Each structure stands twice: as structure tokens, then as C-alpha cells.
Length: 506
Length: 124
Image (tube, rainbow over all chains, first blue to last red; front, side):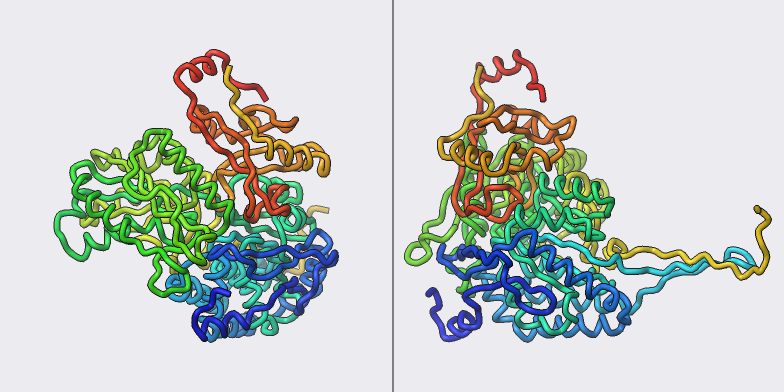
């Protein structure tokens, strides 16, 4: 056991040794009785066992969702809102337990899960609980006898497949709008990180009517594929990697259903020379912005994994920036002073190391990091890497491919036009950062960057009510804003005639 | 002529076993979020190869493709298909076994790049 303090021991004791599927309002064992081990990236040791489900369990979940579909769809918005608010309160009331589960399953430091992941998840349910209360359709009087009424209706039963990088928050981003709009959901958490959603179902599973929210655990090929390809779903939503996104879109095409996709990114963080005009709080903030590639150990689709620094300040800026990165504090993820934790799996760690090797082969200059972090003791078998900074040019593979780890690739630019060109020279378009004291420059650059989220004089903020999603190969659809609700709804046009007379055709 | 794609013994053995169990397979390399930048091993019948996907080579009878948009960046590397334990969630067919395919890269030398350029693009 890793637990050092009584509080940690208490949290650990509230976890089960084994988690099944949550279907039809109760825990149900996988039909074939198979389980897999969920190891913790903190120390490589077993955290719990989880249901290894397959197509038969997916069918059972779809049965439960369909049985609940009509009643949930007819439930008044105010009642759906009230239940989402209860879920939010439950998350807040159990912050410590959920943050602990998230840290142990994902490797993210408790500092981040307590301050960001868990509170943001609660807020997301509150935001959509608010949105649904204010929702309206429209109507138009087409002529004296004819009225077009536009109603928004739920799609029915929807499938959601989420990644392992922010397990609870990604669940909240998907679940809140789908449930608010009256849909029933079958959601598959990532097999690497099933714990926090499972804990939430233990705490909040009796809030929603049975069958409204169903959780099927297992692997992508055994659960995700039958779920996404089922003819019984009305819509599929996916966050993950590109080939799988294509595969799911192919399934959706076969079934003629809509989809939303959030795929990868290689987000440029652009630093104008004027950030160094003064040695003040803003420069300090920009230096933090540079180091933010290490947030969530780089396992973020919007990781600012490229830094573009204006040539005229490059040497002075890099001296401070690299020093800032070198000070990032690694340690036990449950230690509240730890700033960067473990990569989420051994496979992830190996993949990132292979990219560090590619960077070296390509001739990029290693400014800091570039290797495993040996934290010793019980952490030696965990999946730790040093935050790494390379300097090179934008055509290198480490500038073009998503590494999904704490690896930053830095290059220079001369003019604002160069910055825009280099920033856009990528197949992705999810995020970007623009740092400048000049509001007009920041605005013009931000409008030219082909990315769905342009952080301006900030980075890594994910408030509800700010739309989030990709251009180009980063996918389509915008989450974390009420506009996502349209993706979970049909429009019903009642075209009503109040005329008693035939039209004169036949 | 240098091979674009090599394979370790462990990865080759895994592919043979997976093929026996699941039928014809393909490997597709793309990028993006989470499991990206590691090749997906999928049933050939389930995944539609696009007209612009590039065939890098064949490994244990499995065609290995890379997305057209990514090919220019992989073009100068020899990739070796390997397998590691503790894979991560994935639609890739080996993941439930607790392992994951990854690629390791070696940049081609100047002479190798010339030989490949003269041979022209691979056909699907």
C-alpha cells in the first residue's frame, strides 16, 4: 500500500477491489465473468480489477437505455436540471475521494485533481443544468393559416467513448449535455482509467432513473467497437486518436448517424517579443505559459507542445523559460507539492521515450530533460519522465507529430506573418496560445490561427461556456458550451395548417 | 533498397497469433490524442483504407499504412514495429492482452533516402 496518512488510508478503504458495469441502475457483472487488472501509474501496482466486457454486455446496456428512453425524454427540463445539480453536489461533497481516485488511476498530481479536474467536472453538470432551463424552440407564422413550430427533441440513446487523460472531466464533458437534453447514454470509459467514473457511480448512481446512464467497462476493440457500430445508437461522440476517429466515423456512416469527434493537436504557443518589454507579473505569467506543456504530464490534446518564440528575444527568453521548466517539481502524485506526476501507462512512457529518441536523431538540441525520472523507492516502477525541451525547426517530426507527453519543441520566428505561417503549418487545429502585451496584435494573430481554441495571454483554462473543439484533423463539434446541445437533439418541425380548405391538387 | 518497415521478433510473433485468432489484419499509423502515434492493428474487413493512405510495407502478411497527411514526416524514417507491455486503452486488437504495438524510428541515411526516392512511391 502506498498510503502514508490516515486520510489516504480512508480514501483507499472506500475503493472496491473490483468494479463491474453499471447498467439499469445497478452494478452488473460482465456476462462472461472476465476481468482485467487496472494498475496505478504511480507505482505500477494493481489498483483494482475491472469488468472486461464485450458485445453481449453492450447489448444489455443498450437494452437498459432503450427501456428508460421515452420516460427520460419526456421528463421536464426542470426535473432533469434538478438531478444534474444533485450530481454536481455529490461531486463537490466527495472531492477528496474523487481526486484521490483520479490521481491514483491517472498519475496526475493531487494538486491538479483537487483544484482543476474534480471541481470543473461538478461545474460542468451545473452549467448544463442551467442551460436546459433556458432552452426554447422557435415558431414562425408563415401565412395567416400556416404556422411552423420548431421543437427540440432528444436523439434517444447515444454512445460516448472517452479517453484516459482526464477521466472524470471527459466523462462530465460528454454526459452533462447528453443527459440535460433528455438522452440516455451508454458510456465507455478508457480501460486504463475506469476508476473515477466507477466511484462516482457508487456515490451518485441512484440519482438518475435506472437505465438513463449506463457505464460499460472494457477495451476499445471489445466494447468500443460493438458500441460505436451498433445500429441501436442515434449518435456517437468520441475523444481519442485519429485512426480510431476514422473507424468510428465509418461505423457512423454505415448506420447513418451523426458524430462528434475530438482528436489530437500540436498546439503552438506563440510568444511575441513584447512579452519581455518588462520584467513584471505578465512576463512571469508568460514563462508559466511556456512551461504549461507539462500540465497533466503533457497528456492533453491541447498540450502547448510547440513554442514559437520571436527571434529578437529568443536567447533571453529561453534562459528564463528553460530554468522555469527545470524547476518543475516531480514527486509522489499524492504529495500536494508535487507539480508533475506519472505518465498514465507504461506503453505511454515507452512511446514518449521513442519520440525523445527521434528528436535526438533529427538533430534537435536538447535544452533540458530527455530521459526517465528515477524517483526511487516505491516510485521506481512508476511511469515518470523528466519535462523535456527541444530546440529545432517546424518540419521535424517532433514538431509535427503528437507525442502526448511532457516534451516541448521550440522554434523561432521573425515576423508576425512567420508566426502565423509556422503556427498553421500542422495537420491539426485544436488549440493555440498567443502572448502579447499588444491587444491588437494578439487579436489579429488569434483570428488567423486555424484552431478552435486560441488562448490569449493565458493557457490551459477550460471554463464551461467557452466553446472547445477542433479544425482540420483535430475533429469537429464544439463542447463545453451550450452549442453542443444541438448535437444531442433533433429538430421537429410541426408544420400546422389552420385552413379548412383543400389545396387544389387532387 | 532499405526496408521502410521492420519488425522485432516479439511483434512478429504477436501478429502471427492475432492473425490466427482474428483473420486478416492491417496496421494503420496516424496521430493524435492518447493512443495516437502508435499503430492501430485492426481487422482488414472493418477498416476502410482511403485512396490517399500510403502503404509503407507488409509485416507478417499485414499491410502497414500511414495516413496521407502524416506520410511526408514518416518518409525519412525506417520504422520498426515493436511491442511493449502495459498498453493503454485502444481499439487496437492486441490491447486486451495487456500489450501494445509501438514503432521505433531510425532516420534513413542520405544514400538510403536517394535509393528510396529513385524507387518511387509504394503502391497500395
